[in-house]
Length: 209
Image (cartoon, rainbow, N blue to C red):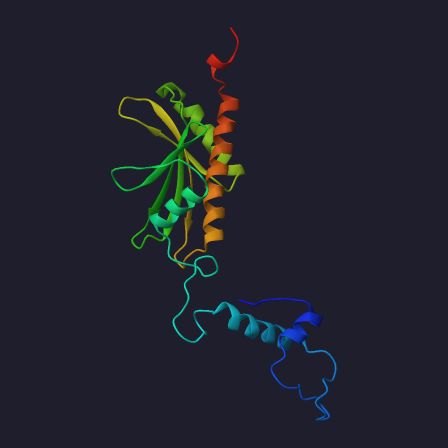
C-alpha cells in the first residue's frame, strides 16, 4: 500500500534524524525529492505509527479498522448492533432481519467462511401463473444492474417467491469499513429491486376502491 501527501509537508515529516546530505556534501538538500523517494519516506514514517503487521516489530496488530481481518458471523452481528438494527439468529446460526417488511439474511458461506452474502426475499408471493413474467422482470434487472442478482423460487405448494442477493468473496479479509460498505450495498440494492417490483405490481389493498 502506498501513502500520499503533499510534497512540502511530507518532505519535512519523512526526513530522518540528522541533516540530509546534499550533492555538495554540505548537508543542505539540493532540490526537491523525486516522487518515489518522497512516497517511500512517507510510507516508512506512517508504518512506524500505524504498526503494519508485516513490517512492525513485536506482535502484529490485527485491528480490523485498518487491517483486513477474516470474515465471521460475529463481525456481521457486531455491525448490526452498531447500526442499531434489530436482528435474529436462526437454528442454523444465520443472521437475519426485516427491512421495510422484507426478510434479509446475512450469510457467511464457503469452506473457510470467505464468502459474504446478503440475501433478501420479497414479502409478497405470486401464483405459478405469474412465474414467466416474474422471471422476465428478474432477467431485465440482471441485464441492467450489477447488483443484486435476482431470481425466483417455486415452493412445494406452487407459490412463487422473488429473491435478490449480493455475494462477495473476501478470501483475503475485510476491514470494518469495507464490511460496512458491502452490507449496506446488499441491503440498499436489494431494497431498490423490491421497490421496483412494487411499482410493477402495486398492492391493490393500498389503492382506494
